[in-house]
Length: 401
Image (tube, rainbow, N blue to C red):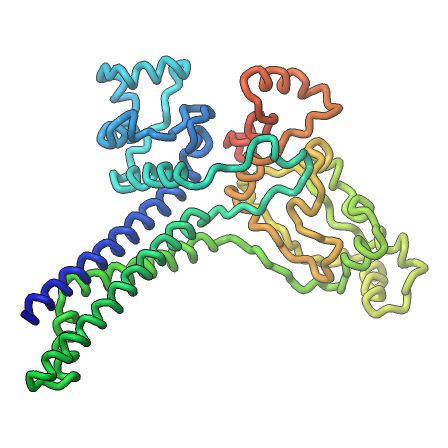
């Protein structure tokens, strides 16, 4: 009788661990799918049913089987050429603009993208369009690497709690069985030892532990890979201890006074020593830090300021386009500079961070006749405000050319 109950316990434990492992694998697939979608698909497709460049992907598995989706992603032109009615209708509907093929995507990766789309549509609905932030307001901090991952990991944690509760129930049952065996002459510890050895020898338990270690190691690797080239929090020591809190905060000096190109040029410009001397020719001349400016001028050498915010050469960014035309404030990207003694990089400045901002930010069209026609055309087909993404803010050539 005891052996039969122990077999049942083993089966229950194996089933729960298999369920947790399966959930973990699905979470990992959806997390990988989120990364693939944002890096390759998001410029043309929404996870909702809203049309962007291509059709919205909500419920895509209900429209086409996964085998068809895999073939389409690998080679859409081949599916169209085969005479497939759905493919040709789609092709003609979008003015015969064929989707970019992705032959290197594995079937598992495509299924991961589909899993992410399904998970995104299962999440709570976003705020109504009427609650969209006004032009120039600070965009929410983007989480380009892992909002979906966190949700899935929480789900996995819930599964593991359920498994723990089941294990406690099993332990209770084993204690009762051990007590019964003890009455027959076996010690409690002998019974527990036998049960522990049986569970340790169970292949499902071993497999579950290996899968769990693999998933945790995989997440740690992915998190580390996402951090490559990201310098968020970087706050180098400068040759002169300049306080933005004192100058921009307490004294309310406009950024444009020192960074002369912030509203007019591609770059904001680093202030020259001459700009510093406009004030410090008379103010705090005796300060050791100000004396460093005098020494630089005497030697006719520039101050070797250390750049804090760096974008790769492959990315084009124009300050005036954002601050002057877009009406954004410095803190949208740089944080609350006026409160910083030492300037640090507050935002990630990744491509995903920029794209998310373009998706969420309203175009500052007020008083700018350039946008009048665009706003008129947009309002005919949409009830939502004109976003930066609607005027080409997601096109690759906007920032890379």
